[in-house]
Length: 391
Image 1 (cartoon, one colour):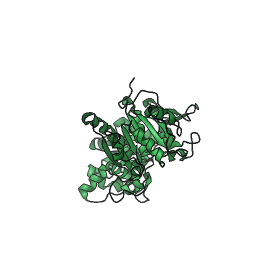
Image 2: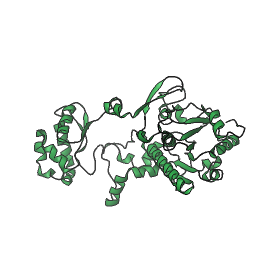
Image 3: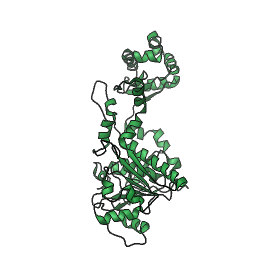
Image 4: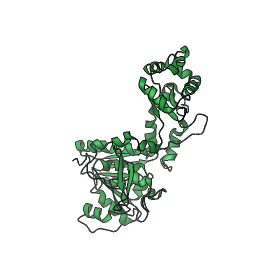
């Protein structure tokens, strides 16, 4: 049994919504003791994002991003609550906040204020646009940052409107970036004994996510276009309709194009001299893609997947979420996880688990906490030598 790489690390988490909770959930998965600070009577706003609800105070976002934490109800708008949080910070290795820039300082919980009581603390601020720059004070949620980052301008049908991604990619990239940065800072602290301030911006994370498009602009100087399910660098590489449902096919190199030529249905297409090289196929995509799809529409998806598998061409069904969650591959990998909510209710809810499970803690997974569930327990552990104030 492994306690996890972060066993013994204490994390004081004042975040809410998604990016911050994802970050601290990852730390908790690796064995850290994560204390989630929530507003008494209100809590993390995602408790009320729904329906559906798992009990009266937890929607899917709260359930999906808050395992392996304990909840403490503290009102940071009061002097007493701020002092309690500052006292807790003395025992913390990591402090994470995702308030709008300047708010933590008004609460008496800035990096400088916490460093005065815990000199080696690793302090992480997560925000939409960072702590500096002309957009720093603008309100930011995932939708805003997807729009500002350029991702939406590149997502959707070329002739249609921009689309956001179906998953909260800006929040997720920021949360993962924050967790990675915190772990690096903790490793550095082992060598130097010094803490560090981390400024993680959702916009920065999104620009990093689009490295291929950024590099393309850097080379050409031209603004990237929207390609729908296609790819600007290769063809055919997108989704195609068959006789019954859509599939995706990726011809990424000459070996795969040659494999396509081994299938009788594509003999005429692959023998066309105007399609003999990847650049030519890219240039001719307006005729290539419809011709390719016309062939696929003659037979059902299962036929094509079998045929493509036989010659080594990457192709897959486009699954619905339910289809892939019930697929033997996902089931065998064990990425799905059951959590109990409300705690003690016996109600088991399927959630997305840990892709990093080989190095995660082997301790029993804590279900997402109810609001303030562990207030007295944590105060007794973290502040054992003082009279415990009320939240």
